[in-house]
Length: 72
Image (cartoon, rainbow, N blue to C red; front, side):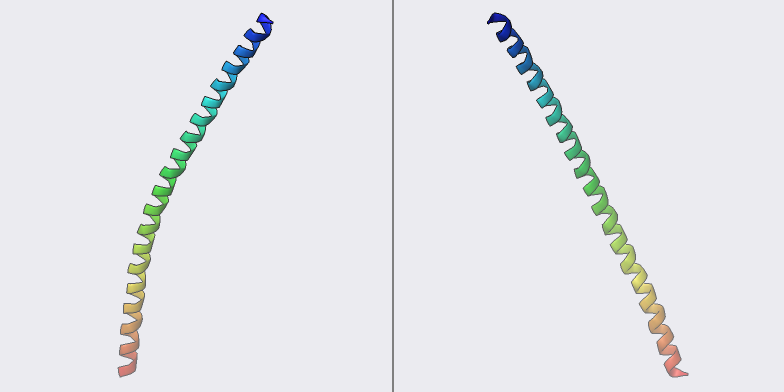
């Protein structure tokens, strides 16, 4: 009975250790994903700004070209 209790205690300790390791791994992964989200949001904002700037150039060129073409 004492041997069974000792084995059970050891098994419980191993289980708790593995559980802590799994939780730590999940927390690390969550942090990595949160960092990735921040990076992607920053990149998205930059691309939106660039897209708006490029649209402005295209509209400006198209508008100027249409205006010049209309006067000819």
